[in-house]
Each structure stands twice: as C-alpha cells, then as structure tokens.
Image (cartoon, rainbow, N blue to C red):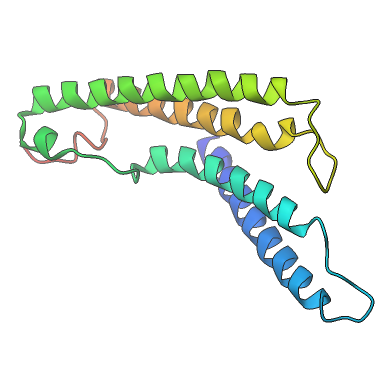
Length: 161
C-alpha cells in the first residue's frame, strides 16, 4: 500500500513536469505559426501545475529526509538525547504542518468563488495544493515519529553512537 501511495505521488509529479514542458514548448513554438498568438492560458496552467508539484514533492522530501536540517548538535549527543532532540524536531514540524494544513484549507475554501484570469477556474483548485501537500507532510512526519519510537531506522538512528 505504501509503495502504491509513493509511486502515485511520484507519477503525479512526473506527469506535471511532462505537462509543463510540453505546454511551454508548444506555446513557444506556436507563436511562430502565422495567425496564432500562442496559447494564452499556458503560463497559468504551468504555474498551477508547478505549485502542485512543489507541495506534493515536499511530502516526499519529509519521507526521504532531504529537507534542510541543522543536526550537528543532535549528532554529537548520546543516543537517548539524540532521539529526544529528533522527536522534538518532529513535533515542531507537526506544528508547522498543522498550521499549513489549517490555513491552506481556509485559503482554498474562502477563494472558491475567485476565478483564475485565463482559465476562469475556481482558484480553490490551485490553493488546494497547500492543504494536500501539508496533509502528506503530516502523514510522513507521523510515520517518522512512529519509526523513531519503535527504534526502526530513521535519521536519528542513522548516526553512530
């Protein structure tokens, strides 16, 4: 189940990149065709797809532990102290992600009536990337906490004592 979930997110990110490249290339090339001024909505679609890609990838970043971290002090600490420091860091991450989830949801709901400039679609579709990405980050951070508490390999346990 977990592999399907990860592969789905990765596939959506790859699909987003393909859409962005194809749309940008097509829009640029079609400008040279007489009688066409380009695809007027291409930049807007590219922007919204990019936003979705960033927030989906942020969740994968939490899963893989590739976000920026300052863990030099934790690495120098003994095992039990290190574990506590990582759990504290995960708790702070959950607070941030919870705020992002809450306010992102409020933003998406409150801007449903607002329409995008070119596509005339509800802006809540673009803003929904914020709570969707935050939900993935919350899930992944909770997974890291469980792994840490059960003693399974995490960032904290990868450091030798």
